[in-house]
Structure formats: C-alpha cells, structure tokens
Length: 297
Length: 200
Image (cartoon, rainbow over all chains, first blue to last red; front, top):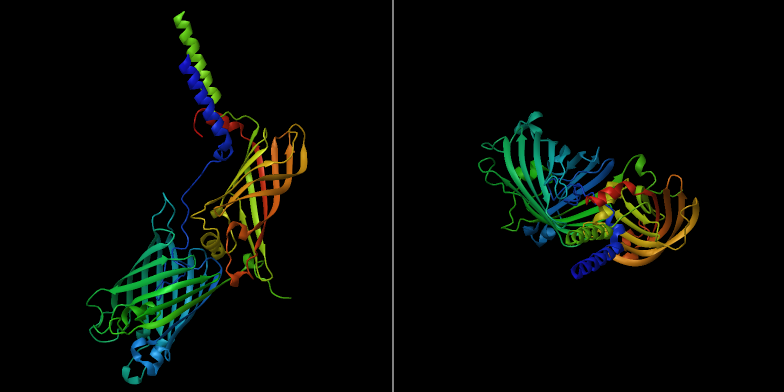
C-alpha cells in the first residue's frame, strides 16, 4: 500500500507539471518539407549562372563590369583604364521560369537565355538538391573584315547547362554546373565546335548580408586551343534590400558562357587578374506590386 | 479476501493512471482558422505580409491563451522581400516560431454571448527575444455554436526584439510594425479520444 501511495503522489506530480505547458503542446507540428530559399544571393554567381531565378513578375536590370588586367601596370592604372561591360534585363515569368537578354561590349555580343527551376531543394525529408536548367544563345554582332570571310550563321553559339546546387547550411552552398557549348565557328583551326565543361561554385556567408563566392569552370582537355585558360573567380556578394552588389577578381573578361568558357586568355599565375563588379536592381512589375511603391503625387 | 484486495488494488491503480492523463473537455478551444497580417508603412514603400498557418489554443477555465506562429509561412506579394524577411531580419532558420503565452485579463461568462474588448497580458517570444506584453483586442463568443473569435491589433517595435534595419533601408521599412491577428477557435472535443489513446 505504501508503494501505491508513493506511485500516486509521483503520478499526480507529473500531471501538475504538464498542465503548465500543455496549451502549447496541444498545437500539432505539421512540419512538412519546405522549399529552401536563397541558396545563392543572385541569379549569377560571378560570371556564370546560379540555380536562382528571378521571382515571378520581377524585372532585374543588370550591369556587370570587368576592368583591365591588374598586371597591365601603373600606366593603365592597373587595369582601371580599360573596361568591358555587360548590360541586360532579366525577367521572371513564374517563380520557376525566367528569361533574360543582354549585351556585352566584348565582341558586341547579344545574348538571350532562359532558366527553369526543375527541382527545388527542400528541408529535411524532402528533395536534397536544387536543379535548374539553363539554355542560352549568343550572337556575335562584331563587324569582321571581309578577309575573315565570316558568314552570318558562323556568328551564333549556343549553350546549355544543368545547375545542381545544395544549400548545406544557412551559410554554405555548393553548386555543380555540367555545361555543353556549341559554337557554329570556333576561333582557330583544330578547336572543336562542341565544348564540354564542368563548373564548380560555392558560397560562404560570413555575415547576414555579405558572402564570399567562388566559381571555377574546368573545360575538358583537347577541345580548345592551349592558349585559353579556365575561368576562376572569387568575390564578395553584398546585399542591401533590392540590390545585390558583387565585387570580385577574375581572370576572365567574358561575362557570358561562350566567352568565359572558351575565350579566357589571362591566368591568375601571371597576375592577369581583373577587378570587376555586378550590380543588380530588381523591380516588381504588375498588379500585386501596385500597393508597394508610392509615387509622389 | 486476498484476491478481492488485489482487485481493488488494480482498480485503484487504473483510476490513478486515468486521472493523471491530461483530460481535455469542452473548455479547451483550438483555432480552426487564423489570419495574421502585418503592415509596414513608410513614405516610400508599403509592405504587407499575411500568415494563415498559425495556431492558437485557449483554456476557457483559466482564460489562458497560447499562440504559435510559423515565421516562414508569412506570404509576401514580393518573393524577394519574403526571402529578405526570413534571411536578414527574422532569421527564421534560427528562430522558426513566434510564440505568445498569456492570459485574458477579464472574467468572461462562457454561458453568455460575448462581444467585448479584452486585453491579454503575457510573454511574447519573437526573434529569440522574450518580452512581457499586453495586447488589446476583442473577443466574440457564441455559446450556441461554441465558437470564439479573437481579434487583436498591436504594434511591434522592431528594436525591442533586436531586429535591426540598416540605416539606408529605414526609408523603406518602418521601425514600428502594425499587426492584426485574428483567430477563430472551436472546442477541441474530437481530440479527447486521440489524447486518451495517446495519439497526440
């Protein structure tokens, strides 16, 4: 009987304890896997694409700049006297599908592209990676001399990529980019028209708004002339509201796939490094944004 | 004699176990519908977000209320803002829920229809910061359908919860956020069996 009494006291004790917190415990946690957001801060990592797409009805204006090589010396202000520019507009048709148009000063290149989020990484228990597919077309608008004998068809190139990324933690993301590029005309004899490459990229966020990013594209051997090198870039993404500033160092001046994959000449080893930046400003277009922006009357 | 004694013993133990189970009857109300909206207004930009996936529980015996809000379920018209809200301001990976535990500061006659202003004082946990608050709102009760509606309007001062806005964005994000929360609650009767069978 003594045992029972002790047992009953113990039981009553536990029920008392429960009563204090029980209201909150009544709320069921229906934790379903949710899509992971912000694997990367922008739709570009540095020169190449990230898994991110522009959200639905968002228009982004992009300006990217690459200065001359740092090893060009003080006469060229270590590269700051020269510049290559890319300007473009990106637009999100849905939250998964975006299109873009851009113009590069190098080769007077016009490019069109589209990206589609095929799979979205989800929190625990869901999809482990994000997969975005990319397709781009490039038109070289440069007026070549007659001797070069360029047909208009020869000025086009096309690229496709699978962008596979995983956000491992709040701060750390990695991305793989198997890439296929077709050039209607390559730059020199002996080069292949079809070029395969593998890209690697990562991001480490060391504060709420600043992240270190890196990007490297490895072009498989025996496809392009040995004078060309692989593009390697490092930079910082700085985010403030609707803007993302990306400041970086890279050995490539090209800002579209066709150029940075197969036409990168400079190398990090001999100081052929270019300082550059990307700026993006995103605007919401359409009905649902109407109440957000106030225009002075 | 000994056999009878052991039967009594068993009955006694069973009764004890039953009595120690948290038994909820009609005095526990749980939300079926919720609607939380916040509003930030500055001369430059208005920001509105809505959360329809939060939960509230009320104990009509002691007038206690508990609310749990999943921060990630706030929907913004602008997805980029939603991303910044979660990543930069609320840090919802670290602090996934906002929680309020409080008590209605009023004696309410739960046999009569009610449409009365009430204040609820309690503890708000937001962005990992706990604060004692008093929220003003209105309580509606219909004894026939046993439905309770809670409607509260209050302001959240971001600095109180260590939510920092960079100076250059102060023109776009208000330092004081207006919040409107509405819950429709009904008795949790059907849950009692689940509790008894240990499913909950």
